Length: 256
Image (cartoon, rainbow, N blue to C red; front, top):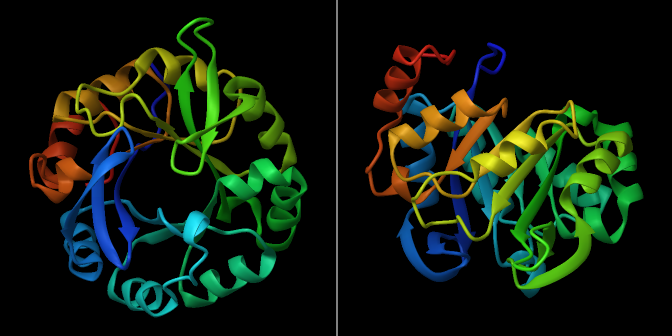
């Protein structure tokens, strides 16, 4: 069994045009509600951190939702992770000023690996999350990183990238399995078991949560630090207090 450390539960608000949306395998987006209301609800229900990811910024190039980020950060008492279209130090500065505790960087980390070193040197690696969307190659079985909402395959293999970006200054990784996203059949346990061998940084696992047992299996089978989910929390298929209670009963350390 994985070492006993406190595991985190992180609801995720995927933002498009200022509204929370969710799809399956990154497509078929449906509106899920008001970001501020959901943020307050999750903070009150025992979430450990909250992720706010602007899924259209990289493609559309609109500005950050600074007012919304500020409003959420002063309305909740847990750490706020903000991601989506962050490509320079000025962007990180604005988000931290608005109340982000951590920033999640995806496409820009791949385009300019040195950016991660600069960012962690300036703001501290504990604030810098590198986010990877991954998919297994059907022929080789190797996992490759995808960008632009899972639409563009890169030639970067995930395990070597974990090693490389750990050395460059990433403080944490957020990894989403594209094939598992929104399917609610459980996390990619085989992948996450292996991923933790390539970095000593915390890993947030994303993609596939459908029920309480999926989190129990994730934390029992792998040594990832956190489980992230969206629609099951938005639709109240899983309630965070019940989830944490079940994890505690399964002998998994959580903050209750």
